Image (cartoon, rainbow, N blue to C red; front, side, top):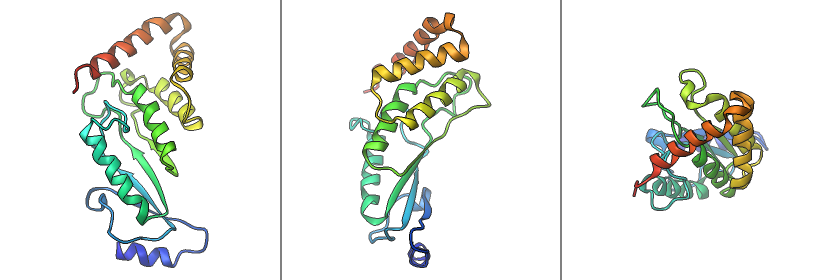
Length: 185
């Protein structure tokens, strides 16, 4: 962090120095790095089953604490969000609804950037085309309502998988989501 402070002090006016907060640098320092330092937070164990705003989820509550600890010691915060499944291919990973709530939380908490990481090449069961489309519309309008988002889900399913398949695919997504989150607590 000493090196970061030195580099930030030498940055031209109006420029940001981006650092990654992960592993050994995940926890923030006790003193400021500078207002021109952007911290890109990465937590590969962030819970995918619950929104970040769910205080009952210990993993996400710890993440919120870490974010709040970073805010006074840097100028900007961004996130590399790895809340998709990389461990249980080839199953559908039911976080399409959680993704909307997380993006809204990032917006509400003043994140400079949000980088949503998910697979687009290895697993067609992730609904990669739909997920990519939904990520784009969420990042363009992070405060959309659940009803608006639902309409985008349906229109995305119709576009990528056929209008005649909307009801069946939506039922599958909704059921997978309900089963994955049922009884977690």
